[in-house]
Length: 234
Image: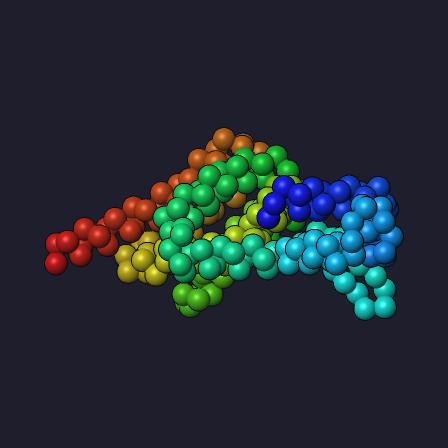
């Protein structure tokens, strides 16, 4: 995309920001004719730029209603990171490293912002993980635990980031769950690490919460190293 194209998109968004959103948070744009006149460009050129916004999930065309700007859903990001992982542009280790950095900040923020309902939801998820005998269910429950922690931060940016990374985060968790399933007592240690995290959140101790979630990640790495040592021994 050229600088000129970027400028047109920026001007479209600037015009939209002067308008009031509707009850669902969408901003209705002027008609193509009106918008092209305001920007001083041809309608085909405008239509091309609007298609870019639609591809990014920032624009919605509603038949009989008009064209709206809105926050994109996370499907584009999920697709982007999913393809990047499959094509080898990013690795499971890189995703895990990013997940750990984000997770520490989520834990610290949640220690300050989490409500009683948030803490109860996290405890319920941990209980379900402890009781589950299905690896697939454990993967989904552990992902939901991270998503719930993100929501407990009361920061919509964090929620969007975790939602956008959801497919690759599930890949990391699935890989780790598969590995720890081969080590005696690893699931129990994993559950206890999560319980320590929730206790730190209840105590409103941000630094302890960061340390607790880091222990969850270190546990994954320790159990993985045990498998590696066993494979070398064999």
